[in-house]
Length: 298
Image (cartoon, rainbow, N blue to C red):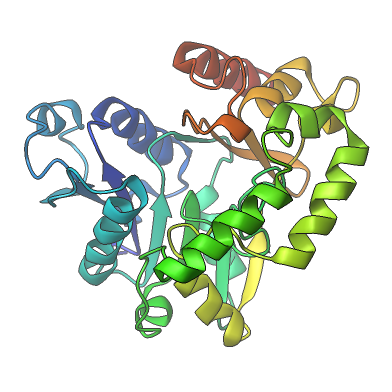
């Protein structure tokens, strides 16, 4: 069997995350021989360690892209546009470097879900606490699709609308998030706050368009089916509903489930105030929790 899945990820000095992720994807795959990896280096080759850090014994290509001095989402989108054009397998997985997969046989699961189905995407939407974003289709954190179907949309991953729409979005985004009130931590603790902000989000829609929004709109217009993983609030996973490790992971990071089992976690160590918690930039703590959850699963 030849290569079937191209795994695309962007890097801005993310070699250590990518090395860990790629080995994780290989380790959890049912058939590692169908995987190939494509990294878009947004330092345009300035990250000299990238080639040395990434494992040599995998099918891997690194493409240099000038993403420096660009807004983060713009450089990310530009890289993914390049990656999609270069994917030469039937299926493609776009994935963030700071992800870990818990699901054994994730590759076979995704391929099996495609059997006898047309116009399907699989993945991890933005969690509910990321107000003003898309929640009913996958984000580029984990986005698995039939390569030709998405390429034939002739859309870009470029995330931003015109200046006037951006200004309007900014105004309504502040309302939806109640200024600085609606943080992940507060939303986790307050069902009433969730009711209020969810109502505002339904009224004002997507006020924080992110990488891939135009593609998501296009697949929605064409009635693609979406199989979505679910990210719970931490309070929904308090013991005995789940293990203490799952609760801690969901409280400070993103923990996604599929069929009531942990599928993946996303660290998302961004400095965005609304989604930041006391531990959300603590990589060691995130990795320790991964090991604890893996031990529970075994």
